[in-house]
Length: 492
Image (cartoon, rainbow, N blue to C red; front, side):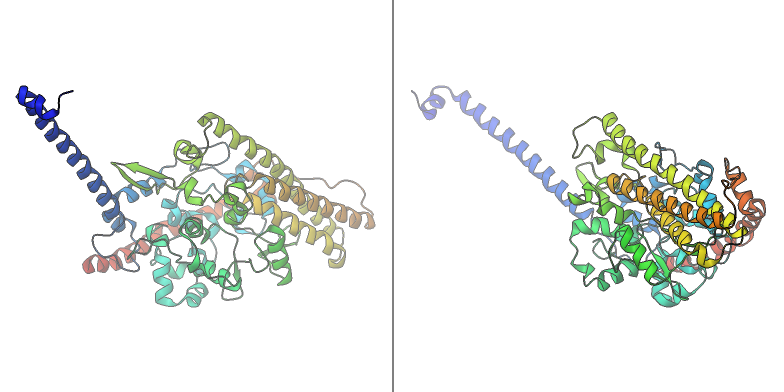
């Protein structure tokens, strides 16, 4: 066999072919290497601010100038077109869908207005517009609504902020939930900006700064998507986790400190209102137990131009099954959608039974009071109503209609129904002692209007007052905020 040198000496054109071929290969390799380096550099720079951001920059658009991919996806939380069987971002009147809830919350703001939560984009707008904030409300209600809150807390002090009224900070709190709530402006690392979560960790003997990055992808959500209450006269926002995060543990916590959110207008029961214990219920589910974070499903990674980043369109995974569910699951989108709906329908079927039973118990308790029952006679029944509704609300107030932990949600609703029936049995014993043995006649609660009329809520008046507030007060808040933010612009 001839050597390459002998071949080239005999046929010089072979040498030229090899020479030119080598040049082409080197050129292509160089282009590939350059592209890889460029993409890696772009990916690294995509997570770095090219100009320093202030510690308390609340305006999401300003962050968006430096992180356009994340900001453009965040802006999509304004989209309210997606509607799933039980959720989504579309506005839906939940009191109209289940008028029994009006009776269950009689005397509490949720009986006035309760709609499906929209995207983070609307957090400030919705709290301004809801009828729930029509009366005196503590400033603590702003805590999870705006990127302005950490700035105001720093300015006023945490305790003083909580002590104020909602209207005290109307011109200060104008930017909806966004970048600053979860990111350190210097490093872009995830961070905790609301004190209640870190304080709950500290009482449990843990340091939240020890959390891993993956844990932080859930904990930043747990700043707000949790159960909490306003402690004492100072309305200090506190997580009731000292005895654990389970529904019975938090119920025992509230009972021990004799905390009540309000006294029920119809039954006079000392009630609890669950907020949105998403994180706690999620911890009981298989996804959390397998190390999946909130962001993995609600803010999955995506790629654009070779740059991998987190999709900040926080939304139901059902509207993004390909990037959320199918990252791990190999089934079709239709199958996965059906799997979720199947679990939610089963949870919802128990929820409806619980709602009907608890609302009935409230009405029957009123009949017992009207018949001359004493507080001692009603104590056991009212405690059972309190526990039944707390357990129902623990599931109902959490997003996902129980999907975050379907078995646990079903178990909790089962105990809620049992407690409600226990209350009804106690009430009928009281009624029997008063000589009443017939079933209590129930009012027509087939619509929200009828249910609100039954509890004596004048919605027309509340809507007129809210319209006047939005027309006269809110524009003043926005004007004052615009003047204040001009100084931010000058400092940039």
